Amino acid sequence: MILMGVLVGVLGGYGAVGFRLLIDFLRTLAYGSDGDFLEVLAATPWWWLLAIPALGGLVVGPVIYFLAKEAKGHGVPEVMEAVNLRGGLIRKRVVVVKSLASAISIAVGGSVGREGPIVQIGSAIGSTVGQVLKVSAGRMRVLVGCGAAAGIAATFNAPVAGMMFAMEIILGDFAVATFSPIVLSAVMATAISRFYLGDFPAFVVPAYQLVSAWELLLYAGLGLASGAVGAIFSAVLYKTEDLVDAVRIPEYLKTPLAGLALGAMGLAFPWVLGVGYEGIELALHHQLAWWLMLIIVGAKILATSLTIAGGMSGGIFAPSLVIGAMLGGSMGGLAHELWPGMTAGPGAYAIVGMAAVVAGATHGPITAFLILFEMTGGYQIILPLMIGCTLATLVAQQINRDSIYTRKLSRRGIDIHAGKDMNLLRSLTVAQAMRSEVDSVPQDMTLGSFHDKVLTSKYASFPVVDSHGELVGILSHADYAGHTLEKELWDLVVVAELATTQVQTVTPHDTLDVALRKISSRDYATLPVVASQGSRRLLGVISHRDIISVYTRKLRKSGLGGGEST
Image 1 (spheres, rainbow, N blue to C red):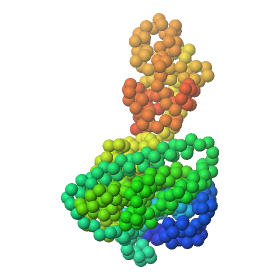
Image 2 (tube, one colour; image 1 turned 120 degrees about the horizontal axis):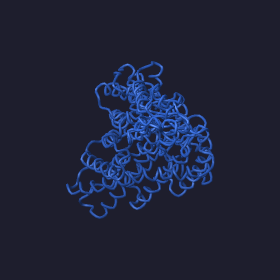
Image 3 (cartoon, rainbow, N blue to C red; image 1 turned 90 degrees about the vertical axis):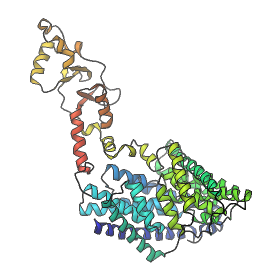
Image 4 (spheres, rainbow, N blue to C red; image 1 turned 90 degrees about the horizontal axis):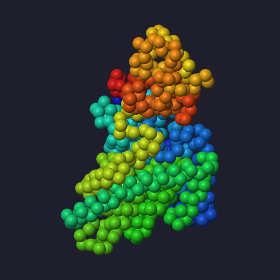
């Protein structure tokens, strides 16, 4: 595992470097320069600024739709789903499709970041290594975590934050066996990134000092506001997805339309386009008015939601940093105008806002303030950062227990909080466990004939069907037991008269979780499986034993049952 972690770190490091260079190359093709993006936008004709995101969407939409739909959006939820439900298996093509789609999306001005794509790319590299070497499911998940750590570490020049991101958010596992390969993977990726891209902080921050102890109350207020903004960001993102999904046109045509709308936003608010680091620098050095930064908070949330919901590919981490910098800079600028003698400069509040909004959106406070330490190269602001991140996470969790990552999974019926084994049950369908050979009885069968059948059958309950094979009811041992001694009635009574007609049913597309809850609600022996909701066409039956059998087999195969070492 140590050697495999090093290998994934090296590959992930080169993947991150290659991804950065690809973005720069494509941005040069689109805008004629890969320099300061705000300066490039200022020199770009308005009609070209409007057209470039739309043309990018015209390419990205079909690439994702036809080659790998899981490459759409910010990518981290797909990695979490692979870790929790598929034993870390990620399709190999995701590396190529995600790299291309995300690089184009970012290069043309999509309001997304690099970290989501590189996490998915690094995780896919880790999964591919595990598949080639045929490792167990438990080790496969660790290698996926190694890839995620390598991606974050190389992208942000932040090995500690990369390691913590993988363990806190992706795996939720701090075991020593998991820790060692992930640490080495993050270290190797960072070394490669520094060799090619240089070793310097992502942001140059102004000098900071705590002017007054009372100032901590302002940082606490910023933390509370950041938690609310992080939750609002998540809600707006998924509400926008619902609105876009409701539009009845092909998915790959929505992307250029979203790009066109994004370009129109960029004409009024150029700070919302692209990754947004240039805007963060302006907030850190107090080069924007506090009221303008407050407007940019809302504009950036809308721009990022439109980019992702429209079908482009990219992360939400960098937009969260921009939103946080603008929120913190706005509050800090206003506070400094009101109380100049007892507050630090607005740049300090911008730093805390960056970490706090990330913590509120991702519910990962440790990752949030560690990554800000490493991106800024300064640890003097540790107390305000810890206060802001902790309060932001608490507020966001009170508003919605799901983070911006897990909310996407919850909308698919996957509850990360319920545990990996419960999610496995929800990922299996009735069709995978049902028995299609049904020991049913016709509704006109006499009680005497049914009694003879019971004596030779291994089942305790029987679906009752009509001449067309449609379900009429269920006849169990409890239904006919009281009539077995009345032999004079055996040839006069038919099973339809004794059967229970109010029957709980499931369809082949229902999950085993649904079936198990229905069986357990009344302690049924079996449930009939019908073609669809509202249909009575009998396809099979499913029992508690059938569910447990398939569940146990899949549990062992996925490595969630504790039988495989990591």
